[in-house]
Length: 412
Image (cartoon, rainbow, N blue to C red; front, side, top):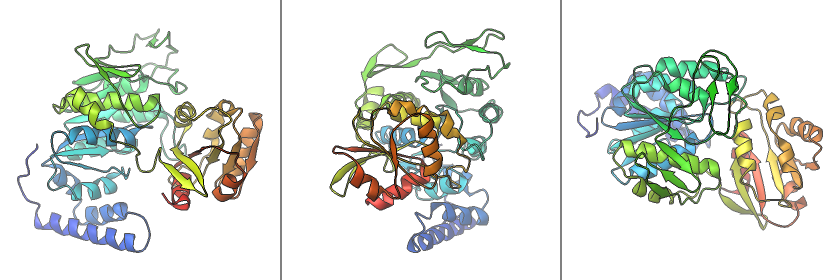
C-alpha cells in the first residue's frame, strides 16, 4: 500500500482543512492539542476519511491495556530507518485522534497507530493494516471498558481472517486466545508480570495451570504457543536464535518487553533487529513519561500508572527506600470513575518509602494505604509534598489525568 498515489477527493480535502482549523481554535483556547475535536469535525464531514488517509501507508496498529503508547513510539523510531513515519505519538488513540494524526502524514510511508482496545477491530477494518501488535489485556477503566474476556472476544471476532501479520504476546492467555483466530501470527515471549486477569481459561472457563513461565488449560488443552521472538534478560532472541542487545534509556523490564515486540514488528517491515534496537535507544521519554524534571530545586521523575498491572510494573523500577514517593490519583472521565481497582494494587511494595498522597481521590488512596499499614502524608498539592519530602530524587507516580495535572504544574 505504500507510495502516495491518488490525491484526496475535494470532500476529503475539505474535511482535513476543517479539522485542522478546529484543532487550531482549540489550541488557541488552551484546550490541549485539539487533535480529538479536529478529528471529530473531519469525520463528521467525511465519515470514511480515516480509511482514505491510510490508503498510501503501510500501517501497523498497536493495542493493549498497558504499554501501547511507548511501544508505538519505539516502533515508529525503528521504522524511520526505512522511511518517513506518521504516528499518533501523544496517545490520542480513538478514531478522531487517529484521523487527526494521519491528516498530517501525506508524505509518510508508514503509519504507526496506537489504538484503544475497544476500537481496534473497527480501526483495523478502516485502515487495512499490514501488521497488528497485541501486547496485553488486563482490567482498566472499570466503568467504561468491558470485562477483559469480553474485550478479548471482540478482538478475536474482529481480527478473524485478517490479512495483517499479528504480533502477539505468547505469555498472555487472553491475547493468545484473541490472536488465534488470525491466520498469520508471530508469537513473542514478552512476559506477563500481572496474572490476576488470566487464571481462568478464555476458551472454556477452566482453571489455568501456570508452571513457571508456561501456562495451559488442563480441561480443554488451550496452551501457550511456542514463541519465535523471546525477551531473554537484556537481549532479544530472533527466530533464527541470534541474540541482539537491548540498550534503552527507558527503565524497567516492561520496556524491554515493549522493545522485543517492537523488534518483531519492525522485522515484518524489513527492518533488521540490530537496526531497530539501535534506533530505539534514541527514545528518552514518551509524552512526559519517565522524564526527570526540576521543581522547587528537586528532581522529580514522572511515572504513569493507570491500572493494577501498570502500578505493579512501575513499583519494580522505582529507586529503593528511602526514596520519597508521591502518589496521585484522579477519577475523571479519562481515568474511569470507578476507583475500586485501588484494592487490586499491592501497595505493600512501597514499605520503607516516605509516601505523599495527592489528587482528586487522595482520600480513597489514603484508605487503601492505611489498610496496607503504610506510613503516608495526605497533601493538598505537589508543592506541599515536595516541601515535606526528605532529600533525594522523588519518584512521582500518577494515573492519567493526575499525570497531566502534574506535568502542567511542574512545567513539563
